[in-house]
Image (cartoon, rainbow, N blue to C red; front, side, top):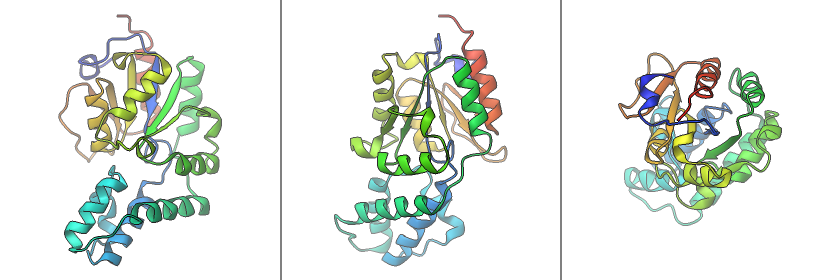
Length: 230
């Protein structure tokens, strides 16, 4: 275990919690582009090439007031549910798993470590994503939606809910994230956090965090955390 993770993680490892978009399913760019399109429709010119930079890791509840502020108009109470249905429709057209995700999950499963998902996406949206990417068997009945709870990341509630559902302590969990708001939620929950992020992209300077560039590296970290004793 790295020194960074040891600042928070106490072991033994009892639960691995995954974010969804950008970690398990390669859907974040699609959803961010839909948000950029909606911003342009409202009058805020966000080009597609800046979509991920502008909206990555944000919930619709956070994106709506951001668009309203920059567009100078109110989008109304139906904007969120309309966008949610746009996301679901886009996922039904096709979505890809993140490279190496099945091998990584098989490895964690062989170690006997329980897994859960805690995402800003709705359960409806995740059900479609996991069905399209053959990930459903790994997470049947083990999905938690910050959107459905009404407390999106960077609030820690969805991660704490996942730990509570498993009956474990936050310091016995490790989270795999790719966005700053998601990582902030994990840190606020008191959990060790590994960020899947390109080598050239910086990460926040928060305690209890480690950076990896590919999912196979996460399997190595999990195998080391399993050996940690309190």
